[in-house]
Length: 214
Picture 1 (cartoon, helix red, strand yellow):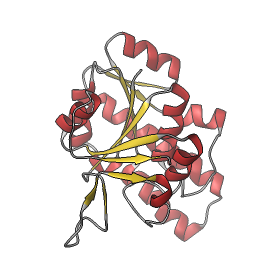
Picture 2 (picture 1 turned 90 degrees about the horizontal axis):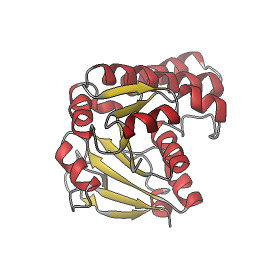
Picture 3 (picture 1 turned 45 degrees about the vertical axis):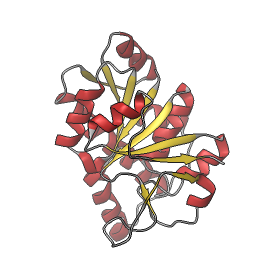
């Protein structure tokens, strides 16, 4: 397995499904973000103040739900609970969509906080598999400031250390720390353009941001 493609919840459903259709047969595995479901959970937590562990587990279940629904809409894709089953599907030319709650509850490797989202979880799993991580979202990458504001410029390469001081970006707060810890890297690409994702997987130059753990 060469690539882990984290499909952002902002792409659900049509863009996520189109991207996954393009990824069938590419020796990749998909992990879906929790999207609106996880954001709703955040709102509930702000009002009712659940424990960090309850929030963490529930947010990962949101990833399971959207992953199940995306896989249901893509011929050649299949939702799986284990890395072993994912590897078997890749060997069969299919696209595994990992539902990570069982794996993450068993290993429990990351802190329980809202700093950790599907981005950090996807990196952790890519690290286990020694695969590259590509995060597909609804913007072209990391910008100098909010992309909707005038003058925002796409950053092609940024160090994880520098990203720690950026504040809110299109990736979660904990991901740069993991990249630094493991001296690794990941790519941010606009998942509304499946051809860009495929080109990057094939080693071609496309619009993206590379975050380096240095």
